[in-house]
Length: 330
Image (tube, rainbow, N blue to C red; front, side, top):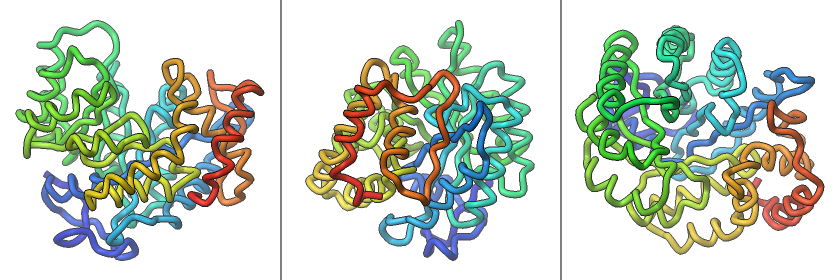
């Protein structure tokens, strides 16, 4: 399988180069904080310059230990469900242009309708700076468990052979659990999962998947307990504003220092509580508000996004209180 990493492990960030290595080395690179940056909008349209500014901030503020590469994924929290395939492709192109060969780029793909997902992977695989792996978003609509495993196995094999593609699956439905495990163990194209259910699933998933793939915690930066249970890395929606937070969490977790990880988690927990309350209703808009209120000029949140207006005044006040003591984590 073709993937992009550096040398035997991962070299210094500025010397990160595209080469062909094993799934194991990609998994080590993804044992990190995967930033999911919001898509900035102005006047109802994507502000690609603002997006490039945010990616530049992330690349220039890498605090990961051992000069590990930054990992960025344009995904659900970014609002990919509210943009066209052409816009999503452009976002990946812009992200890749800014990242160059200094990081690991993931692209989230909504799997239905499947022909559109096929086309998007083909388009992105042909970019000058193509994604290093793809995150398959949770399957929607009506499907059987047998159909889930059969279709995704065929899907992965096809794109592995045609494009050298590697995949992770975003696990959000507990009923799919056994099929997801089978998918990782049986398809060489799928190298792991992002867990978006609950902490109680982490340990058994790690046990059952074993060395065949990785389990990433996918419910924000409150990731210490999941790491204790065996997850490797986590996804972050706030690192686009607080890069030091996600990086410090991952550094501590990789070192087995869960006390240090918990200390960072405690500092950012108030903002995370707002993002994830009431079914994640402010997952995107709380980050926009926090970025605006922070006053930092090296990032740009835009104005608001589709179906995600600015938060109500009461929530804005809570966000102000949540971030006032953590601005040093920028």
